[in-house]
Length: 137
Image (cartoon, rainbow, N blue to C red; front, side, top):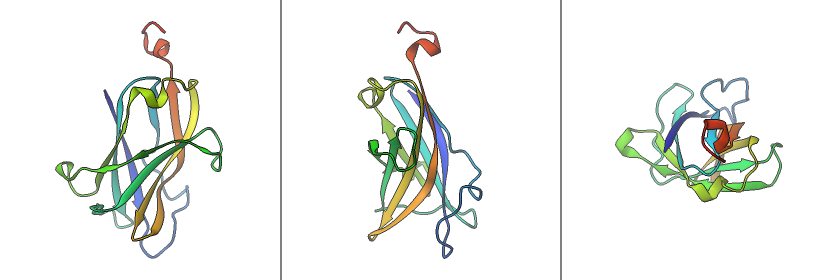
């Protein structure tokens, strides 16, 4: 099982960050039909980890447009054993086994007391076929 790390950012008191302001790890690469964990570290605009205990986190994958229908939504699990600010999203084989290899978009949303923040804006998710990693299709 692969582990991919991404960073999320929460701008306190400034509203949403623009794509230009978020210039960190935001690309996910998966192999169709494989298990994978996406590990996220959420920091505030001062660079400090954000406690997400009790928050609702969702990683959504869309085809290619920011406003396309959601293809899959994966709930995040806060992982305090890794430290403050960490959450993980688990992909299981059934999530991607029937998808075509190619480029998709994902984002991560955090909901706290009914307030919705996009903490990872629309970013690239690349899906390769099993043949691309040297296995039989």
